[in-house]
Image 1 (tube, rainbow, N blue to C red):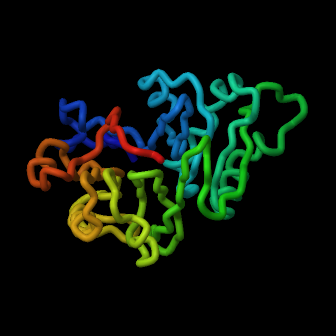
Image 2 (cartoon, rainbow, N blue to C red):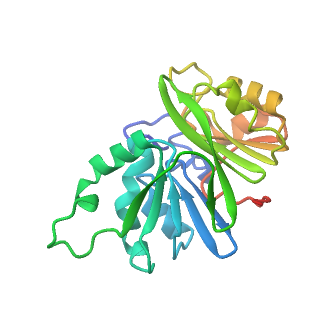
Length: 244
C-alpha cells in the first residue's frame, strides 16, 4: 500500500526519515547502455522522474497484482522514443491479466493514436536480453505461483511466502539478494523479517536487502536489529553487481 499508508498516522507513516517514504517496490537494471525494468508499479511515473529515466528497453513481470502492473500506462511516453515496441515478458497467467487490465492497449480502437507502444512476449524460462541472462525463479505467493529473477550475481524476490526447494538451488553464490520481508507478524502470502533472515542464513549471499516493507517496520530501528550484511531497501537505493 506504500508508506505513508493512506489514512494512517502511526510512527512510521509520520516519520520524517526519508527512508520511511516508500513507493511500491520495483527494480531498474542498467548495463551497457540498456535498461531493464522489473514490474511497473502504480508509482512508476514518480520513480522514473526521480531517477531521470529517459529510455526503457524491456520490462519483466513478477506477477499481475495491482501494485506490480498498474504503472504500465505511464510507460507510454518512453515507448514513443523507441524504434521498436517495448517488450513485456511475463508467464502466461500474468500476461493474460495484464492484457485484460489494459485491453485498450492490446486491442486498440483504430482512432487511438498515442497508445503505449508495448508488446507482450511469452516467458518460459531463462531469457537473454542484450547479452545478459535473466533466470526466472519460481516462488509461492500464498497459493499463487509467481516469479522472481536472477541476473548474474544478484537476485530479486518480491511477494513470496515460500521458496520451493528447486528454486533455492538457483540462489547460491550471490553478491546481492533482495527478499520480501513485509513485517514481523506472520502473513499468509508474504515472508516476514524472521523468515527472510533464516533464508539469508541458508543462502549466504554477501549482502541482502529486504523489500516490500509495510509500515510496521521503521527503517532506522529495524536496521539496528539486523546483521551488518542485511539492510532494509529504500527508494533510490543504487547497487553495483556483475550481471554476466
